[in-house]
Image (cartoon, rainbow, N blue to C red):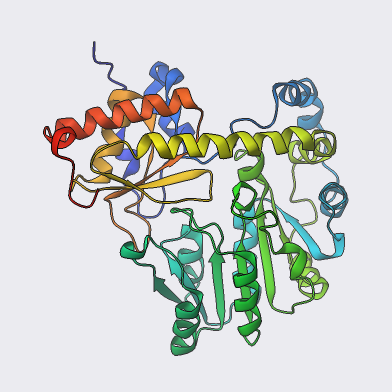
Length: 386
């Protein structure tokens, strides 16, 4: 029997972003309970059940009382992660930091590779500034050549630059030494931002983050997203690392009580649960390998290499990614990310968050059914370019 999930697909008729998970669930009413979210790249193994139980038992207290001030909470986070509190600015999600970085430090132009995270292509443009989009090439699997990006910045006269590492949506990664060398060559820019929202999922090298190496550089900010790392997107919290002078200017612009009590409780609980967090990262990296192997067995699908907790796929059979998204959601209860509303990429690309083997097997089976229905001979003859 075919199951039909009564989702309101008109919710996807937006320019820059997908509808929220909650909007979709409300539209599906009682049919949403077994929908698997492959859209939002969330850590499925953290927090642990014991941590969630602790938060639940404290929820009335957290909701009824004011949180501590920003600096108190940030100091605890720095104590846990081994960071200098004077160089760290905690915020209500990394997007709050993106907004203020643009307001304070981007004068007239910002360069960024595309495709990438949408706020980097949208924030400056919304404020009337020029966004210099450096197009990554599908033939190069959207890999970033730092030398070419540097030449592009010089040609455009860009005064600020952003690199997401690993990049979203493709998961492309630039090695630490190469990135630091590029940063030093661009020391004349007003601002360089390295968005490391997914850096903890990297396994190509041990010490992937550059956060410990940039506090002596005058124009560099590293962004971190606690929600993405710790599997808590609903709790809006992230932080920036920079030299002390830049951090002080950014901190002064933010509200003193911009972090809520739930985020405070989570941050204060992290120190005693870092072993569980590291274990969750190991599990995700193993899941990523399994997921990549299984997806690469599909015909008419190219799976790009990724160092994030998500995989981007190119549908080689000419099938529109939006049709694939709608079919998987409405008939298979699987919510994937169609990438056509990102700058620099088209709708033949989809992205799926890394999940455990049971969910992955369900995704692979559903994708295979979708592709066979669109291309009946695909399993027999394969696809050009596959």
